[in-house]
Structure formats: C-alpha cells, structure tokens
Length: 415
Figure (cartoon, helix red, strand yellow):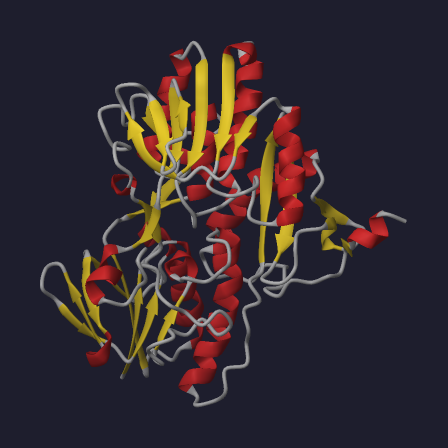
C-alpha cells in the first residue's frame, strides 16, 4: 500500500486531497491529510470585514465539510518532518510514514518578528487584517473611530495576497467617504517596495489611483520597530511615520514545523522547483501554495494554478514517467478600488500585467487593468466559486497557463 501524506488542510492541501482521492486507487493508495485546526477560513474575505461587507459567518466553515469520505484525517500539530527517513512526527508523538509527501502548510503572520509591533497597542490601535481576530477587532475599532492618521504598513515582503494592502487603502477611502468623514482621515500607504506594487505596469496604475484618492505613499520604508508610546513606526534608516491607527501587514513566515525540520529558508519557506513544484532536495516531496519559496504571488489563484501542475506531475512521477507539466508563475486577482468597482490583473513569471479582457478575448467579462463594476462583482462572486468548486478540486473554466489571448500589448495601445 502506497502512502501519500498531505501536510496542511488549507486551500492548497484540500484541493490536492480532493483531486487525488478521485483518481488514486484506494486498494493501492492510502491518503492522509494532517492539520491542527478544524476551521477553514476564506482568507480573501478578511479584507472586507473591517468595512462591514462580510461578517465572521461568511468566511468560516468546518474543514471536514470539504474532505471526501474514506480518507484519513488527523487533527494534530505537525512537529517535524524527517525527509531522509520518509517520516512525519506529530506533537502528540505519533509517527507517520510516507512514500510521497505534499507540503501545503501555508504561511502565517509573525508580528513578533518586528520589535514593538505586538506590544500594548496590539488590537487596540494596531491591527492586522490577515487573521480573523485582527479583522474583527479592526471592524469594532472603526465603528467608533473619529478619525486621524490611518497608516497601512507592509513590514516586509513576501506576503500573502500582495494586492490586499492596496485594496485595504482603497476600501478605507470609500468607507470613510461613505461615513462622511473622509476629510478627518489621513491615509498613508507605507511599503518596503520602491513603488506601489511588485509589477511595474500595475504599480504605475496603482500609484495613479493612490494619488487620485489622496492617499500618501511612502516607499522604500523597511520597518525596524514600532514605538507604542509615541504611536509611530520607525524604519531601519530611522525614518518615522506617526499613526493614530496602524494597519500592519506583518512579516509572513512558513510553518514552524518547516524550521524544526531544517527544510526551509530563513522565513521557513521550502526550496521548490519553480516549474515542477517538486522539492529541490527530496524527489518524493512536492510543495504547493504559500509554503513554497517561489518568486510567484502567494495567493489563492496561484495555488489553484499550481494544483493542476502538481496533479499532472505527481501522476507522472508515480508512473516513472517524465514530469512534463510546467508552472509558469501564473497569477490573477481582482483589486478592489472602492465605490463598487475593481480592477483585475493577470501575469506570470515573465509577463507583466497588461490591459485586455479575461478569460474570453473581447467578451471578458472581466477587464484587465481597468476599473469596472463587473470586476467588483467578480470579486464578490469568487466566494461562491471558492466554497463550491475551487477547494473541492473541481475544474474551473480557466487555464493554469497564462494566455496572451485577449491581452493588449503596450505598443497597440499607443496606435
């Protein structure tokens, strides 16, 4: 009996569980998924909670609702992996042996990595929205806040969903405008990047939006510490930004079990082949989603596109065939711009975001790098797609490879 272990039952792990359960012969394969939390979080929804669009019940469901029958489910903290022995040890001392391993342990915020960030103002004047608790506490704070300096600060890269901090700034502009108090809120977007976003073309568009919405942008700001007493963030080169409310995107790190296993980089992300998704160090281990160290976005769409590649390559691997499927870094995401509108971007390792229509040329219905109401509805409709199709490992009508069909090259826009 071949043993397949899947570490992590978040988006990526649950997708792979469902995909492999449908095709692997139960007489030949034993599939086990391991996680320590019974609750599945729809993390893209956390962004909307501080602004009253979603509530807690909109973003949580039991993980077991999405597990197929007759698979082994182990709810326990993963202690460490011993890849040389094909073993995984759990916190309770249980030893599990595998023939193949899929690491889908994700990433989490680590505010303790920044001096003073998780100090006395944590969830009082300093909030995150990358956790349910952070988003819920921020929603309560905004209910009675009378205004002041709202600072949105990315501590360091990489982070989950790189567009989310920009979306937060745009939604805050809309939220306080609707409340009739935008003139009382000074919004500042502070980033360690040299521009508003990681991709040049998209950064240009985002910078224009920030200016139009009167949102100050401070770039190349590498946060060194937070002064809770004087309410300011301080960079390593001693620049300072004062705040009355700090919305932080803390350091993102991979699971601590990766560190204990000696398998990760300094942020606990696993060295992974950027094309095959196979571990660079162990041929019977594959890595997916936020757990990888790939130069691609850590986002749900990326995990979905990766899942198609991993699925094909795993089946080739167990048959002794060449792994021909290649992940091209494909990512796409909606960017909420406020006031019931959004943009969409589509890119990969080599290709910058550009204008056009997605997924069908000319028809769309979504417009790339353009603000539309349809894009906003697409963002909201994605929640249904996520719960009903994506994490159940169902096929979606989009290719895991980025297509140039429907894209408008820059030189064409100048004609």
